[in-house]
Image 1 (cartoon, rainbow, N blue to C red):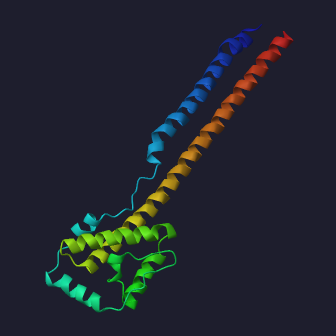
Image 2: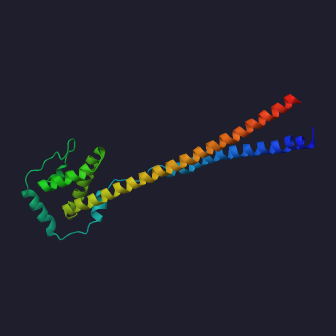
Image 3: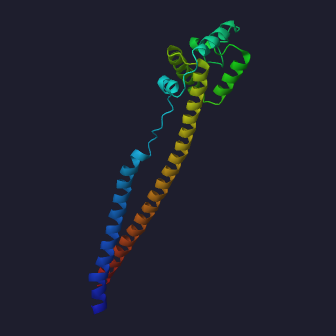
Length: 204
């Protein structure tokens, strides 16, 4: 056996195999550790729930006469339509504030922009905000408008967070796929080294 063959088998083959194994285990560890690290970040955490206290605290209390005036006008309004949309029931506390046709149309426009699963929740949270506002002497109509503003802002933030989350997931999936391809490449190197070693033994 020549010096070149001995150097190739005892040093280059061993070095190449060692480096290939090192890269394979390193990439596997990176995939696992990376998945653990980013798994918590890839979980959606945005909440679109709006509390009654959050709405009332965002409103500057009006003059004491304002709530009374709004209630008087509400009493004089025609009876409300309790079914704003099919399958959606308007809470009792909101009926006096959405009795006029233009108010009903406005509410329907709000609800039409929501998913079916969010509509009843939207009304229930709004009803809680109105109840809290009336108990504190705050204008109920102002509480309704403020609730809608906060709610739709949170829904928009949720959509943005969902889009960002999808991008992060695609990025991680791409990186993981690239790492798997590299693992396959280094595994192929090990296979070729094993074939070369067995071939030389057979020739010897």
